[in-house]
Image (cartoon, rainbow, N blue to C red; front, top):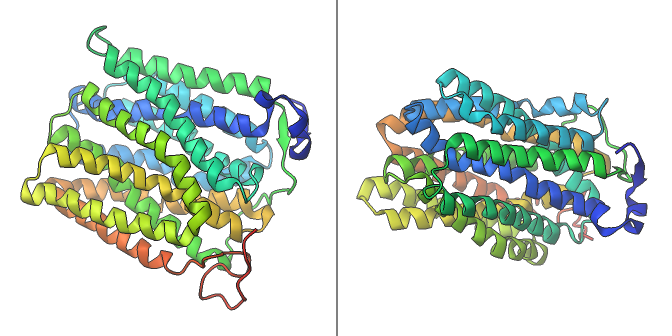
Amino acid sequence: MTRTVPIGEARQMPLWRRPRTLLFLMAAAMPIAFATWSALLNNFVIEVAQFDGHDIGWLHTVREIPGFLAIGVIAIIIFVREQVLALVSLILLGVATAFTAYFPSMGGILTITMLSSIGFHYYETVNQSLQLQWLDRARAPQVLGWLLAAGSGATLVCYGLIVLLWEPLGLTYTIVYMLSGGTTAAIAIFALIAYPQFEAPNPQLKKMILRRRYWLYYLLQFMAGARRQIFVVFAGFMMVEKFGFAVHEVTALFMINLVANMIFAPLMGGAVARFGERSTLIFEYAGLMIVFLAYGGIYMFGWGVLLAATLYVVDHMLFALALALKTYFQKIADPGDIAPTAAVAFTINHIAAVFLPALLGYLWLVSPAAVFVLAAGMAGISLLLALLIPRHPAPGYETILSRSAPVLAE
């Protein structure tokens, strides 16, 4: 862990010790804790803490505060290497998840959620930076798709165990949270010890930067964060509150999502490489508009649980196409901007996340359908912004409004 190895020399190392292998290991470790926490969360807070829509909104507002403060990563990487920060953050996520069930009160859940969220958001910020630094542009979309599939595969094993063993073994929230969080922490500790420090070829700026030419990327990140909150907070909550899904039923739905991701995420990465970021994001946002309007129709027209579950899976699959936003930035960015811009973009992504869940929690009590119609409107705005992305984005040709002539991507 103290040895430094340039990325170019890492190809001579054993396959299991290479940078790309580490990315896959982290991609598998993170969702074991986070996705398990998410799968059990709605049942846990409703059954144990008697949360309503207002309470769940406040919980997710607190959970997103560290994401809003992700810009603090820039200060931390002055003293700590990004790779080390990513693994330490994974350890924090795992440990906090492991102890979640020991704090069943409103105050306890908010506190432990804040700690796990710091680990999750700081890991995600640095991980995105490492991916874009360690992966070459030509292969990045495909590899990002495979990374999504790897995370889905690892989580599928956990969910399968929950579905199969929850009732027969009488599993509890305490047992499942301890096992999932402990596994994530153990994998992160192993990676911290077993892997050398990989040195990317381009030194990263270690100060906050806001570049005018990245404005479209910033706006797309803002809209993605606002829109995603409605799915994360209220789509799963709907399945429990409206249709009475039990733990194993919610987990089974998550498993369907995972299988779909394992199959389609690599294909989606290939689609980005073939059709480009512009076409891929337009397809994603148009699909999300339809899905969110259909969610609203469940409440307005009384559509059934089968449609709701189908929409949930389609919704989750469409969000996987967001990898196109990463590769869009990779193509337009100066190499040294990746780490600081990843932190800034993560903060921008979470601006709406800090206040939307709490505010929409109040709206949910009045009209759940209105919450989803609002999300459809956000997807529509994102669609209009995606139309400004060039077919071949590059530095100096970040949007179709740029004055520079198009430069074909490598």
